Length: 416
Ligand code: PLP
Image (cartoon, rainbow, N blue to C red; front, side, top):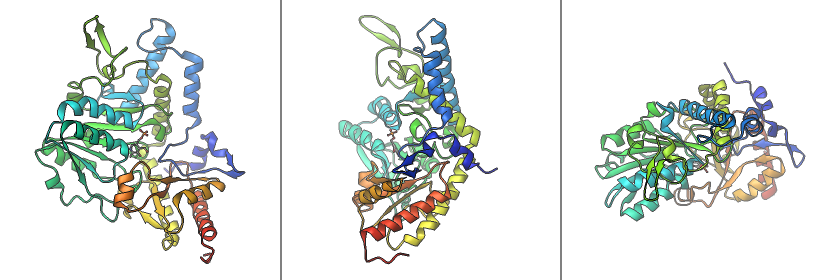
């Protein structure tokens, strides 16, 4: 069964918007995705129908909102294959999930001389929290290098991983290169030396089947807003044996069982990690996004995006003299992200020009400054990133707009 893209597009009201009088071509999905009517409606239903605080009221509305909030947790936990909803902590986003792991687990388990292994392709979210922790604890950061092709160079992995390694924190899919990393294999090797593995799944959970039990990871973080859900909500999966020993991240209401003037005892899991009133509407909206993605099937989503990526790489190949394209050529090792750069046009100028034609791409360092600057050796790249509602026609429009930009910025280039 193939996905009916036209039908899918009708679910996304924003896709019929005109930008500067032109149909919107939204190719900035790695930054955030658009939202289907079903998700928007779930938010409206909550606020119109049963808005109340969760876990504390004895009245009907509160019981309904609590039930729907916990139902959302069950759906989201099921979506990533968590053994129990208790393993899923609702957080604001991937960034908060990783910071939670660094503060609650890292601070108690990383000490002087220990090593934290990350990759050279990390988003700042999965780099800065570990840098800060390493500095505070006298631990050492080590890096799995990136090859010229934009994949991980695993040739020294057996040396990089050693008895001092306490954590391997790595992205499942790079938001710049599109590379999908062999996190399961690396995780197995990390466990063999006694290290934990944290997966930054911000770019994988929205686009492909992800199962935390199959990956056998200790932590996995993701954001709702990149997977058709609302902003301000995301998930952190933590393996039970680790979660049970972790101290709370934030303290206050909701996360306690008993409080006196002198002490407090912690609530059950996962509430222990959800201090204060949570993002109730957001969680329910994320649950609706999961319903939507599951109705399509994540295998289908992944297959469709791979087709589109193959088409994009093939179509844009014609411009390979004018643009450098980054990321693996093997379609099994990459997702629906294409980063590129022209020596003659600054990515911001390119982004601005494409925007005039209604085409939204990203330009900049994509919150991966060390990768862009030190590894790729450029100040910025342009990035087109696709999702289930993008079409081959939109790829053609991108190519045509890039050719226009080349003509505009370099009058000497003959039109192809
Ligand atoms: N990790 C990766 C690989 C990302 O692409 C992003 C966002 O672009 C993040 C982490 C951070 O996500 P958020 O801003 O939702 O916390």
